[in-house]
Length: 286
Image 1 (cartoon, rainbow, N blue to C red):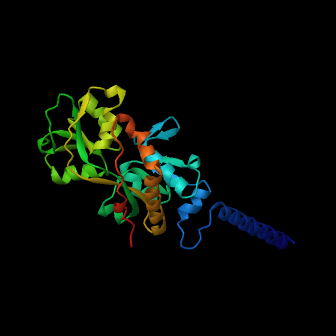
Image 2: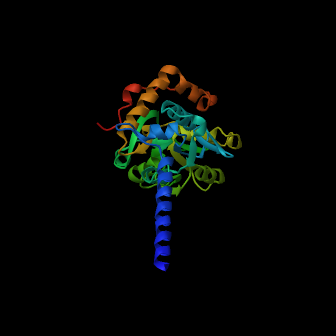
Image 3: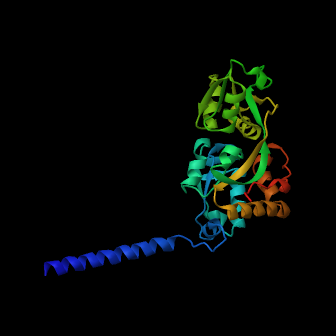
């Protein structure tokens, strides 16, 4: 009798596990053959975007909300994939964790001033570029630094895992490089005089310099020494998603949503919207 009761309990447990498994499957949108899984996730309101949280005008967290040009680009992508941009989930990323977040599924798409380069393309896929920046220097207003050639022996701050930090190490080895996990920490170090300069992309630096608490304290050197094409990161194997996002970017030029995204964010600085060259949206693998 005891054996029969144990068998019955085991049978119930198996059925319960099976029901739970079926329930979890139903929570995951199915993907038709040949279609990116991003489409189903968008329609289900499940898209997770990795974004920056400390870059004024680009990706900035204000309370529980995020704002900036990259956030507006994320909304354009979500809408183009068939979703409701109001249902997007935003996850704060820093330069060093963007690839791991994509690879492990912590985010679906990264729009976070994410420079396309050959090393990263081995790990993730890139749509874009949707914008091209240039590495520059932010210095105190009274600084005599006029370009990277004047950095020998100077203390320069950048972010761990970023393209600008890597370039300083490789091309300007006499620089005393200070690395943090966020540019906001570099700006504070510049403000306190702990470092002589901050280096990253010009548009990021311009956003910081324009903040009211730093008014008149910093200046952009204005001598870019690189070309930084910003891409939209997604899983390496998702060619269909990459192609789809490029198509969405092309459409954003035609329908005016790209310019509107710029005007509502970075355009407030007085910088006119760039012309998105759709002929360069060619990063998806063949």
